[in-house]
Image (tube, rainbow, N blue to C red):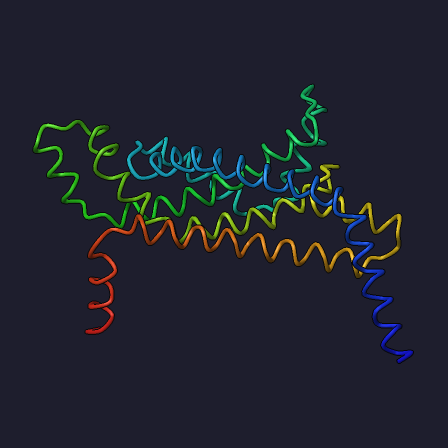
Length: 240
C-alpha cells in the first residue's frame, strides 16, 4: 500500500508539473508550427524555381541553381543559421531571431525541395512536352499546365518527408534564441531541474505532431494520386 501511494504521488506530481508547464510549451509549440509551415511554403516556392532552373534553364542558370543546391545541402543547417544570425550583422544586416530562423530554414528547405521537384519533373515523359508544343502551347504554358500539375502530385511522398524533417529541424532554432518548443523546454528544465520529465513530454509532443502531419499527408496523397501510375509501377516491379 505504501508503494502504491508513492506511485500515485509521483503520478500526481508529474501531472501537476505538466499542467504548470503547459502554457509555455504551447507558446513554444505555436512557434514550432509557425516556423514549419512558413519555411515549408517559402521553401516550396524557392525549390520550384530552382528545379525549373535546373531542368529548363540555360547552362549558366542551371549551373547557378545546381551550385546553390550543392552548397546548401553540403553544409549543416546550424552553420547556415549562425551565418545569417551572427554573420549578417557584420555586413550591416541585423535580423530578429525569428526572422533569421525563418530565412535559414526556408533557404535550406528550398534546396532539398528543389531536388524532390526536379526528380518529379524529369520522371514525366518528354513526349508530353513535345505534344503540348505541337498543339501550339508555349514552353511556359506547357510547363505550367501540363508538367507542373503532374510533378507536384508525384512529389508529394518525398515532399512529406521534408515536412516531417522541418518539424524536427525547427528545434535547432533555439541556438539563435528562438523560443520554440525545445527552447521553452530547456528554460523550464533550467528552472525546475526536471530534465527527464520535460524532455520526455517534448518528445511525445513531437511524436504526436509528426504522426498527425503524416496522416494528413497520406490522405492528401491518396486524394491527389494520379490514376494508373501506382498500377503501372506495381506491374513493372512484378515482371522485373
